[in-house]
Image (tube, rainbow, N blue to C red; front, side, top):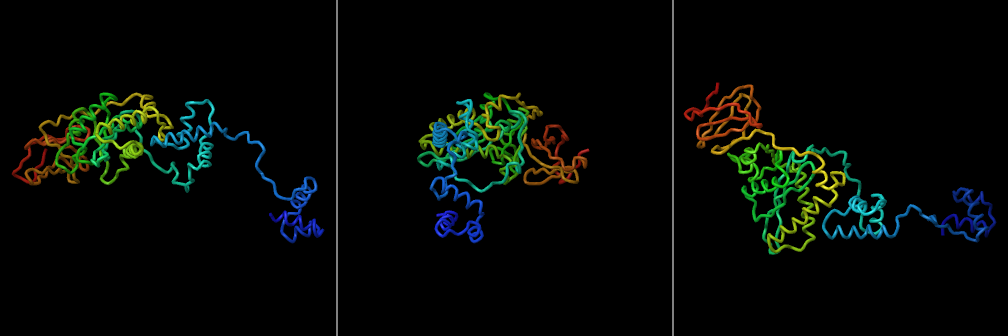
Length: 379
C-alpha cells in the first residue's frame, strides 16, 4: 500500500480534513484530492499503472524475432553481432528498419546485452588512415593451433585504407621466402602497394641485424617503401593486430582443424565473408571491398634500389656528419658532411665498396672504405 492510499483511507475512516493530512504527512493536497475523486468515481484507491494503452512506436514482434535470430546467427558464426551490425544486415532486407538504439533495447530486454560503464569516447582517439587503397599495407603473423596441438602461424596482410584482407595464409612457421611469396601473390590479385608497414620481426625487418631481409630487398627492387613500427609499440600496426582478433574469434567458433589444409579452408571462408559481407565499424559500416573499389589505387612510386650483391645497413648520420660501418668486427667512422647530420640513410656494402643512400633512394656518397684507418673523410 502506498502512502497516498493510506492517507486517503484515513480521511474516509476518521473524517480528518485533507489539508490537515497533507501537512501531517508532507503530501501535496491536490494529489490527495485527485485520488479521493478517483475513489468516488471508480471505487478504486490503489495507484494505477502508467503504462500506455497503445505504443505506436513499439517495435513489432516480427522485427524482434528477426533481431534475435540475427544475433544468434552472427554469434554462432563468430563474427560481430552488435546492434549496429544487425541494423546494417536488416537494412539490406527491408526498406524501413528499427534504429540502432531500438535494436539495442530489444537485445537488452531479451538478455543478450549487459550495459557497461561509459568507455573512453571514440573522439579522443587519434587515428592514422591511408588516403588511398594500396597506399599502405600492414603485414603481421599470429599463432594458432591444430586439433592435435601442432602450432602454426597465420600471415595476414591488410590494406590500411579499406581494411581489405588481401591475404591470410597459414604456415607451419613463417620464413622470409613465405613473406615474399605471399606479397607477390596478393599483388597479383590486388596490385602492388606503395608501401608496406610491419613490426620488427626477423622476417620483416633488418633493423639491428646487420643486413637486409628478403622482404625488404624484394620491395626495394620494386620501388615499394618499407616502414616499421617502433620496438614494443604494436599500436602502429593496430589494424592488422585488430584483424588477428576478429579472425581468431571466428576460428574459435569453427570445428578444430586437423590439418593445415582444413585451417586454410576456414581462413578462405572467413576472408570472403569479411571482405564482401561483414559491415566494418571503422569504415562507416561498409564492407572493405566496397571501400577498396571506391577510389583509385596507389602504386609504387619510390626509386628501384637493386641490392643484389650488397649487404644493406641502416644507419643515421651523427651530429658530426659521420656514419659508422662495422667490417670484420672492427668499427670504421666515415665523415660524409655536417650538412647531413641527423639524416637516416641506407648503406649498400659490397666488400670495401660502399654506397650511402637516403631512405627514398637518393645517392649521398659512393666510396671505397679505407680499412687501414678507423676514420676517413669523404670530400
